[in-house]
Length: 260
Image (tube, rainbow, N blue to C red; front, side, top):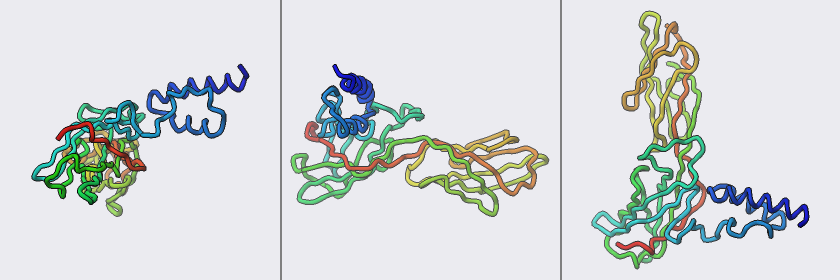
C-alpha cells in the first residue's frame, strides 16, 4: 500500500468516527473533491436524500425530526413530531423540557396551493396550519421546514447608565435599566430583560467587576446590588443565556408513514 493510500485510510477512519457522531460530513466532502477518496469507507459518506437512518426521519443540523401525527380539525391542519439530538451544541446543557431544535416556520403544498404553518412555542413540538381546514393526508403533496433554529450559549458584556438605559445584547435581546437607588454604601439597580418571540431562554444578568454582592430575578426583572458605588454613572454587566441561531436551508419532512 502506498504512503498516499495509507494517509487517506487514516483520514477516512478519523472522519468516519466524526461522521458517526453527526459531525465532519463537510470535511469528508472536501476530501472527496480534492483527492482520490477510494480509501474512504462508503458508509461514512452523507446520503443525498438527507435522511439519517430511516425515511421517516428528517435530519436538521444535528437533530433528527420524526413526525408522529398529522390531523385535520376545526383549527386547521397540524403536525406533531418528536426530536432526537444526535450531537448537542457544544457548551449547551439541555434540561429535560428543552428542545434541541426550533423548526419555527413550515410550508405545506396541498389542494393546489401552498400553506404556511407556525410553531409558536419552541417547547411545543406541533406545527399548525390554520388556513387548512378539512381534507386528508393523501391531498398533501409536500411538507417543508423553511425556517429553523438551534440553541447556542452566549455571554455578552454591556455597560448601562441613566443616559443610555437600553442596550442590545444581540438579535432580539435587550436589557433596560428601569430603576436605581443608593442606600448607605450600596447601590441597587433593576434591569429588565426584553426578548422577541422566544428568541432566548434562561437569560441572566450579573455584575461585571468587584463589589457586586447580590442578584435576584423576578419574572423578567433582575435586581443587582453593588457596594461602595454610590453615585456611579455607569454599570458594567454580563448578560448570558441561550439564544436561538438560524439554520440556512429548507428541509423536506416525510409524513407518508404516519396516519391521521
